[in-house]
Length: 161
Image (cartoon, rainbow, N blue to C red):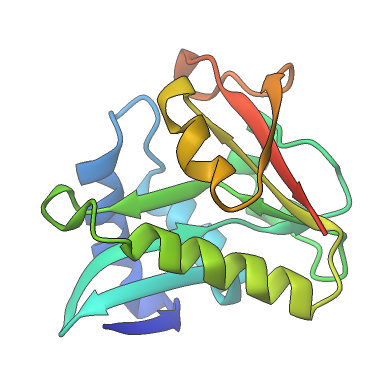
């Protein structure tokens, strides 16, 4: 498996994987991904099986400690000098799940944040994924007061270094 960061040439595949992983109300659009790649393509960790994109993790850097809905929509809020690595999406094609691929990419995001001296990593997830992220050291901070993305209740989780 090849792991690398994103370029605009990956836009179509990223959008397709997102659509396979999230309902339309929660999935980012092609336009949103285009903007995200422009601002922080180096914070998209992509995994390929041959030429096929099978999994990715993405999110930007900010000094804001909590993940907000506005962050999903405004890639321009990315600040490469910021303290926190946000994770907006953890995506693995259904036929490739339960093989550890997402975990490898989460580890890439964590390692990158550590290497750049960040304070830690923040993400939101649904209740059923709390145990999964806990395995990486994320602590559940409870239901997010700043994100109801897709009209869903999200738990904010934080890994502080």
